[in-house]
Length: 248
Image 1 (cartoon, helix red, strand yellow):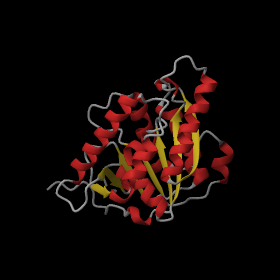
Image 2: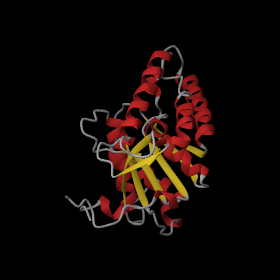
Image 3: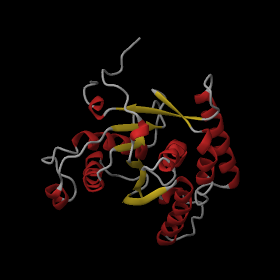
């Protein structure tokens, strides 16, 4: 057996303030909505941060960018009510556009230092065959920001935030969209809430595409739960922040 890390896997049950970072407006709910809904029900404060402006996936190409943004936010607000999201934030990097991991990391450092979460969720940037630049950039920048949050000589995008910041503990990081999970979260009790949230994203899914997505989520969650005493599960790679550098 290969030992991934000498550090124990942090326990999600103790999460009290979660910042879930997503490249696009629906990724948190598609990847980890059942888990995040459970944490919200247990009293955790759930915060969503969307990295891109998400304008490239809008079905109605006749909409102006301003009108499209209003519809995207409306979809998100409706989904957030199903999951129990307390607050949402947007960075508005260009969807499928040209931006650097370093620029994104600076903004994420700002948000981590402002919001002071004890857990961070993000897509797994090391997912085999992931071709979407936004997903890779988001996961890499999030992981790097988590391990650098207390190193205030590494600047965020806001010097005032850096100056006011005092160290705080991030207890764990959970990667969704992973093929190397070390934790399967049972989500039978929040499965319907996850589906209700996902179905809110009508701006970027036609009815046939939505039906296909729901079918894929059901198959994937059942596959993750196979052989266990629950029906639906979400695969996550859960790590102590110190495990994000040099494989400690």
